[in-house]
Image 1: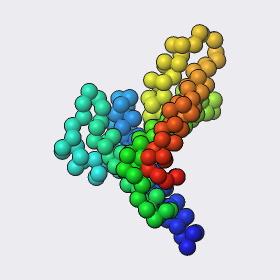
Image 2: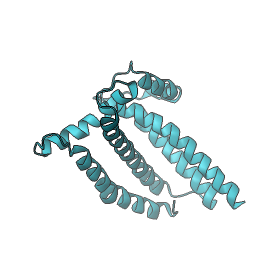
Image 3: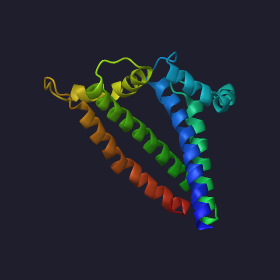
Image 4: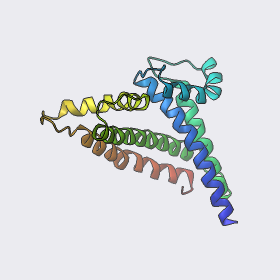
Length: 194
């Protein structure tokens, strides 16, 4: 019975995680004004449209912020955490705690997306610098706002670019100083441990 419960929790986390990744990517690509004619962008739009289209009828975006995507991510994360806690403990967590845990989970997920994109960009710059690929265009577009700010803070070092390291350290500090306290507060409010 324990193994069946673990398998079910794993499946829920995986399925919700994959769809959350697609919606998060759509939100971030729209935020950085990525080219939506890119095949990667087209795939993300195709996958996320079935759930986003009904929300867009009632909730508009505002100043470049895609509120329907934000609401969909929050609803998905709330549902995922509710299902996992119900399967794991057989009881429903407190709503306030569930909301805080969902927000913390979404922020952490966004940070992980940026960390992964920065890491991939560094890897691509070593393996095949200057190569054109639809995926590399998306990665560079996603990481450019963060890396540009980090480069503005650093003095010129010639050929070495330390901005990815600065960004990765900054993102990890956000997890430690913001996400972990939010998660702890959410667990106390929810009355369950995830």
